[in-house]
Length: 66
Image (cartoon, rainbow, N blue to C red; front, side, top):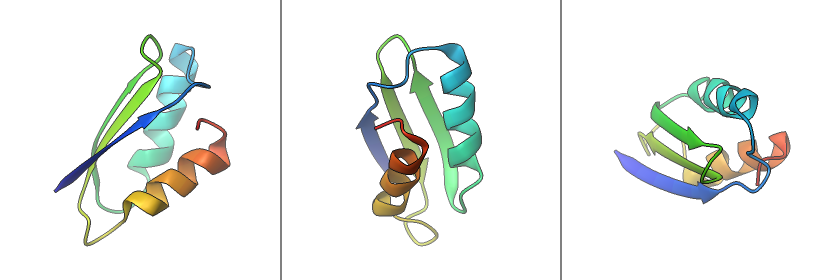
């Protein structure tokens, strides 16, 4: 398992937290998602044999959170 942390300046409400969790948990290999609107931070624990940090980054960028 690998853990990747992201700064997410567009993460500023609970509705964003729920959406980030929904988006990331849909990816194969994602085990845990911690998202905080208070700290504008996201931390993802994932199986690097099923997905990559680059894929997580691309997904979050596409959704507009990074």
